[in-house]
Length: 324
Picture 1: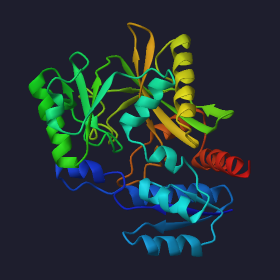
Picture 2: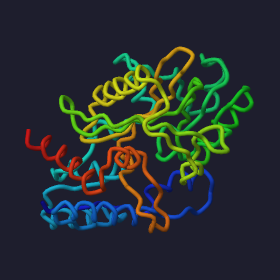
Picture 3: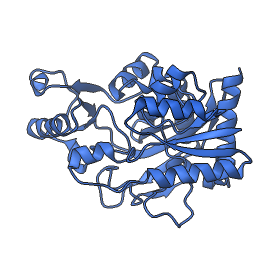
């Protein structure tokens, strides 16, 4: 196949830059190079196309490339353009990518996927008289990736802390805040490859915090301690796998994704937090300058896969869906 790796600068750091006001390194170039190399190792042709602010220019280059498949549509505008042009691409469609985290959680609730109780706050006056879960609560943006906008102060214990956390998200990121019941337990993430009816559920990966209370943006810069599979018994691991599959299928996710959970040991329940449709896919070589490890990459390494093998499976899932 002739594959396009679609790359947009700063796609992984743009939201947290808005939140902190600090310039952050761009790892998207290295990520695109990694994907292209893995695809070539599988015997395909791969070209990297850099997304620019000029949508017409992007559309022209994508059409001129005569690509059999586009990989790494990294945000809503890219997916919208690819669908409008009728180009085949790997990953979830506009019907899912356009939904914010609060809408996805409502759909999960309707599909009986267990997720923490929540409230979306777009204006601070909504907090007055709102029916909130009991403290402690967790506050994060309704959009974004890589724990953008998440700090230890996202865990709030008083009305004043809640208002302060919501204000910071709304004012710095220009979007609503998702206020969730703070479920305590073990953070576990589960990767999936494939489509409904033919899904591979990867080994659940436990994320142990190192010096933080939660998995913040900075903590995700290779400060986590990983355990794959998660240090849970067989029954708990089975619950996580089944919950991940239900969460993935209920939102009509495609080809690959990753579902994040908190496993509540007291009640033996996995609470689904988020579905990441643009999950990182890199397996690090050690030569990277800014690129960080990916959770799916860690799961793949546990299975003995190379980057080429991971992408072989990803491309196969997309090809089979498109051919159906």
